[in-house]
Length: 248
Image (cartoon, rainbow, N blue to C red; front, side):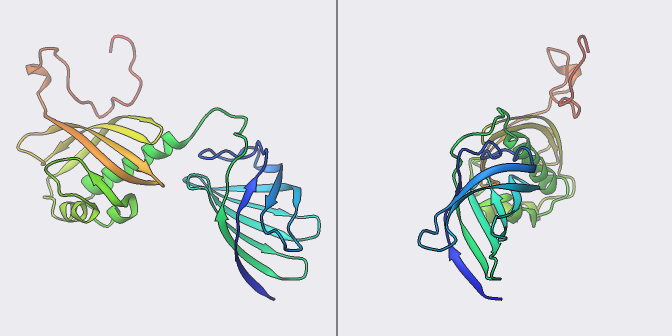
C-alpha cells in the first residue's frame, strides 16, 4: 500500500453540523459538503457525504465517512484550535495522511457553547491536582508553556509553579466552591488551609487558551468566622455552588 504525507487545508462549507467550540450536532448520519484544497490532484472535489462523529472530549472529534468512489476518510478535528488531522484510503489503496486547518463558514443551528463548562472542569482539575494532591507533574499537562502569573508572591512561569507545588507542606489543602465561566475566563471561589497562619478565602481567575491555563490572577482574604462577622454568615461554604433554597 502506497503512503503519502500531504499538508492541506480542508474546510466545511455551509454545514450546520459543525461549530467551532461546540460539539458536532446530528452525529449519526449527518450530511455535510466538504471541499479540500488539494487543487491539481485527481481526487480534489466537492462532495456531500454522510458523516459519523465520535466526541473525544475537549472540543476534539473523530469524524469519518465513505465517499462515492469508495475512498474512506477519518478526520480528527480540534474545534478549539481549528486544526485537523486526516487519514484517507483511496480506492486504489493509496493511504494519505494530511494535516492542516479548517474554518467554519456558518455556525451550527445551536446557540449554546460548551467551552465554559469544559474550562470550569479544567480549572477544577488544576486546583485539586496542585493544591489537594500536590501533584507537581500536573502543571505541564494543565498549564500553557508561557503561563503568566499575576500573584506578586509567586515567580513567573510554569517552572516556578511546578517548584512551588513540589515544595508545598502537607497541611496545604484547597476546597473549591462557586465557579463562574464566560468565554475564555473562569473564576473560582475557594478556601485554602496551610498557605498562611489562618485559613484564607481566595478568588482565582484564569484565562484559558488552547485547552490550557494561560494566565492567572487571585485575591486572598483571611477567613473570619461567622460568629465574628458583622453579617453573621460564613465567607465560604463548600456547598455554595449548589442552588440555595429561599430563606436558607
